[in-house]
Length: 270
Image 1 (tube, rainbow, N blue to C red):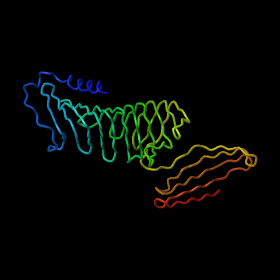
Image 2 (cartoon, rainbow, N blue to C red; image 1 turned 135 degrees about the horizontal axis):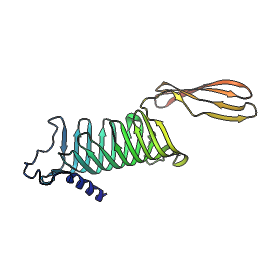
Image 3 (cartoon, rainbow, N blue to C red; image 1 turned 120 degrees about the horizontal axis):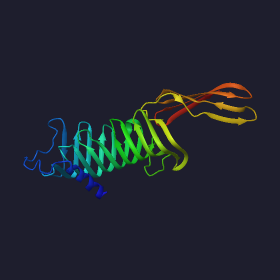
C-alpha cells in the first residue's frame, strides 16, 4: 500500500513541469469562500517545485455536498489530481464510502478506491470491492465486488444472502450488470452465473418472480408464475396464476403487511 501511495503521488508530481512554477508565489490554502473547494488539516505544507499540497492529520476536503476525510492527503491544485490514505471516508448526501486509499479528482470528488466498503441508505445497498471507481453521480465500476441489501443488527453476523462478482457495473436507482457471479446464502455458494443483470431500484416496483413447479398424484404437473404487486411500502401482494394438468387453471393470492415495528399479518386465498 505504501508503494502504491508513493507511485500515485509521483504520478501527480510528474505531470507538472518541475521548474515551471518555481518562481510563482505560494498560492493560498484552498477555502470555500469562492464556493468551490474547502480544505482543513492539522498541518498543511506546499511544495512549490512540484505544485503539491500535502495535508496531515484530520484532513477534511469539501466541495459542494461531497466531503472527504482522511489521515493524509496530497493533491495538485493545477491538475486537480489527489491521493488520500488512512481512514478515508467519502460522503455524498446520505451515502458514505470507506476505504484505505483513494485516487480522486478534487473538481468532482470522484476517483478510484481500493479495499473499499460502501453503504447506500438511499438505495438500501451495502457494497464492497477490492477496487471501486465512481464513474458518475450514481454509477460505479467494481472489481471483486460483494453486494447485499441486508442490514443485519449484528455487523459480525453472516449476511443472509449476498452476491459476489469478479467485476460489475452498477447504477444506484437503475440496474447492475455483473460477470462471473456467485449467489451465496449464509456464506454458502448456491448458484453461479457467468453474467447477470438485477435491479438496484430505490423504490419498490411490480414485476414477475421466479416460476414455480411441482408434481403430485392429485394435481399432476403444477406450474405457477408469481406476480409481485407493489401495493404499498408496508404491504406485499403476490398473485400466482397456476395450471394443474389434472385439475385445470386456478389462481393463488397471498398478502402480508406490517404495522409499526412489531405488528404484522397475512392473508391467503386460492
